[in-house]
Each structure stands twice: as structure tokens, then as C-alpha cells.
Length: 214
Image (cartoon, rainbow, N blue to C red; front, side, top):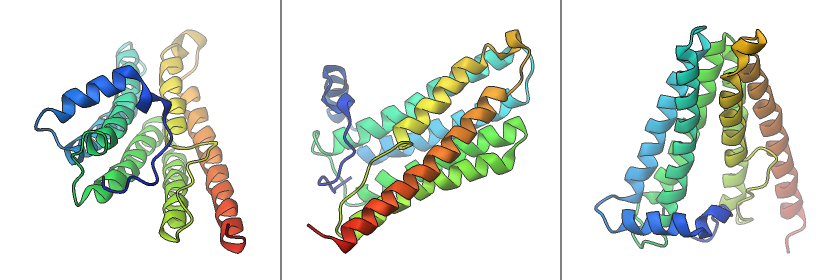
């Protein structure tokens, strides 16, 4: 990551634990790009675990969902520390902007497609992934046209991961309610509708900014 002007506002970036961990990582030979690449691996694991959990009705499903939730959070931690190591740690690389963006798009696709395929609603999973990518496209379009990055919600990246993480944890209890994959199905709809609303909101804000520049 080399562009430090438009960064996603994160309270966790200023927390003592994040700063401490980022400093330790920056002191090692780990690069920001490697951390960004690790986020793809975390997302791929999450997607695979969601896929397997969706097709499993036994007790092993609980473990699969628990580790899927942890993998989603691992993806977010990678997204946090790659920027901190690059900027605060002074280890930004020339190709950082690519690795700052591409892994996020791949991660959304891997996770939501994995859920959709696992629960038997592949179209829903792909649709959620598509709108998730669209939110990022509009944000980058704003930055590319000189109007800054719009990180507004209601379904930005951290919100999407919060939805699927909570859904995974709640889904662990589904067998006790006589349900199967209903929570994950609902989560995909929440992400899809929320991401569509986010893309629409960001688009309108960008258009207004273009028509009425400050």
C-alpha cells in the first residue's frame, strides 16, 4: 500500500493491541503484500468451511462454522495489519495499491460464493459477491476521479464480515431449533440488499460531488 490519503476509518487502528502487533510484525521480514495475500488464503479457507458446513448435518458442522467465523475475522485482521505495517511501519511497496485492493475483491467472492454453494443457493451467493465488489468499484471510481474514497455503509467490508461471522455463530445452534442453513441464507440476503443499498448510496454521493464540487 502506497496511497495513504484515503484510508478506511477504523477505530481498531488506534487501539493499543493493534499498534503493538503491527510493530512486532513490521520488525520482522514480513511485508505488507504478504499480509494482503494471506487474507486471500483466510477467505479461501472460510469459503471452503462454509461450503462444507452447508452440506453437513452432523456435529462436525458446528466446528466447521466456528472455524469459518474465525477465518472471516482473520481476513479482517490481515486487512488491518497490511496497511498498518505499510504506513505506520514504513514498509510500503510500489505494487502495494494492487495488493491492497485485489485480495479484498477475491475474498468477498470466495466467502459469499462458498456460502451460496454450500447451502444450495449458488445464485444468491454470487449475487451477494457481485454487489460486494460493486461497492468497492464505486469507491475506487470516486478516488480515481478525484472525489475521494467513500467508505460509507450500510454494508461496507467490515459490516459484511460482521454479518457472516454472526450468522456462522448463530448457525451453530440451528439443529436445536430444527433448522438447516436458514441463518446463512438470511445472511446472504442481508449482505446482498445491504451491499446494493451501499453501492447506490455511494453512487448518488459521487454524482452529487461531481455535479457540485467543493
